[in-house]
Length: 347
Image (cartoon, rainbow, N blue to C red; front, top):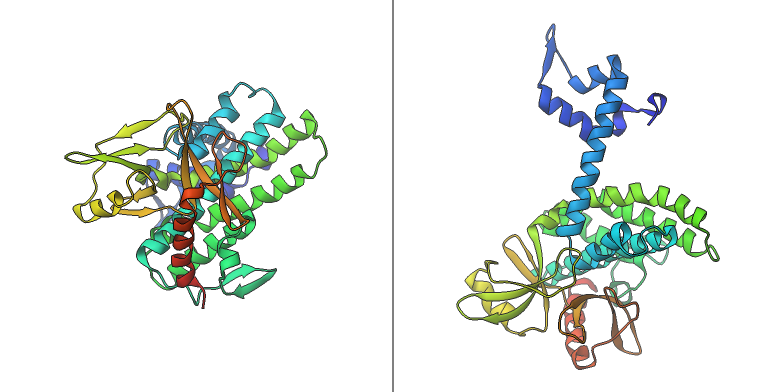
């Protein structure tokens, strides 16, 4: 970064870290920010320290993505950095796209899972759709497969929760900055998708645009440190869960996850057939917006995100499997779950 390109106000995280380290500076009863003094008097020192700060932050976010985020997000980000085609900019862009789209689908599942579990009435909530603001939800909007509409839905619920003091976790932790960054990524994705047979050079240029945006997304996903994506497996003296996090898709089980006694019957009511989110002390189903698929060997399980409803069936895309599938025996249950949510949002 060149000195002339530095703008103090664009690096508030770094500025605050300096202020926290150096403390308050007071001269003649005037309080001054240490970061502002450094920027004004020693801009080169500021630039070097900012570069180190950003490099460390990027590495921390990479570790968050690799080892904490749900595997449908983490797997593709791992492939972006360390997969067999990670030297191919076209493949890298596609994996990054898959990763941020998985973020969108996961946020969608979290929002509607919490709304359904807490029976939040959203009949007066405003949502943007059909090219117009301040409309009401309907079934088509709820079950959309269009990613920008999904983001509008998430934003509508977040805004409604915060405006009305509903204290939804999705309202508290899903920031508008996160939603806007994902929206901008989708704008770039659409531009890239309309390029016939993109060249390596075009992909590299696109990556220069979208990678900083994706890093902004990751900064706003730290709340996933308090979320576990789970599938109930069995019960002896405590619940045993299959967990879905980090870049590996291998089956992992955990018996140390504490579930309140009041929630045990809830998670055990559909043994092995539901994906749950445990968000701090809350636990709720992510169905019908998230399900799972075991591979044929029994070694891996793929989180599967809702991709649309066609021919009266719910269709899903499992991570790693680039094709849509449906779960025929569960269609009636998915419809009933959709109706529960619909009854909360349709005036």
